[in-house]
Length: 267
Image (cartoon, rainbow, N blue to C red; front, side):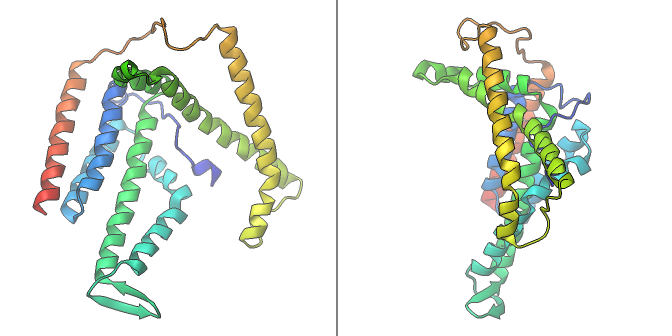
């Protein structure tokens, strides 16, 4: 299960999606997430799934690698679907279980909710698969530069998000090592009820927190040793510049958003 967490991991491969400006990918992810909430019909989700499939194909990231990231949220996905199935009111009752009833409207809403969650996770993960943490930091800082005029610490926010994404794979690897070490000493994380499994995680959480604080302290000392004082006056080794492909991507994103809005209105 630990190995299945793919959030924050970068998949190094040469593709047209990897070469896009990070600002384009950030805006594209935001537009895709918004579009999934704009539509609530089969045609809209079909178009959204087709668009996601095309981007995945162009990114050259294996579909199995992206689908692996859905395993950690499988419980949340099933729980959300079950809530919509049993608690959505409707006129067409298909099954009655005491005070719980399964309606056609509930099944429809649960199906669309499940598809929406899957597309959200896959679309968001694809951004981190195709963008390095440094590119994400530069893209966020440059894209939100206008907020500096109202006192928003854009550079600090972008730096914190970048560090958080960078530390996710490290903490996953550290957790896996601790679990294997505890299992070699006879620890059992699979048997027992939910309460017993939660208690069994304590030998993992304590050393993981200690290791995390130690890494954070080492990172802070390294940044201070390099005279890091925030974003004021800093220059970039590779400043972001739009290319022709980035402008074409912006046009495609605008057309996609308009299409999804029309589908949400018409259907």
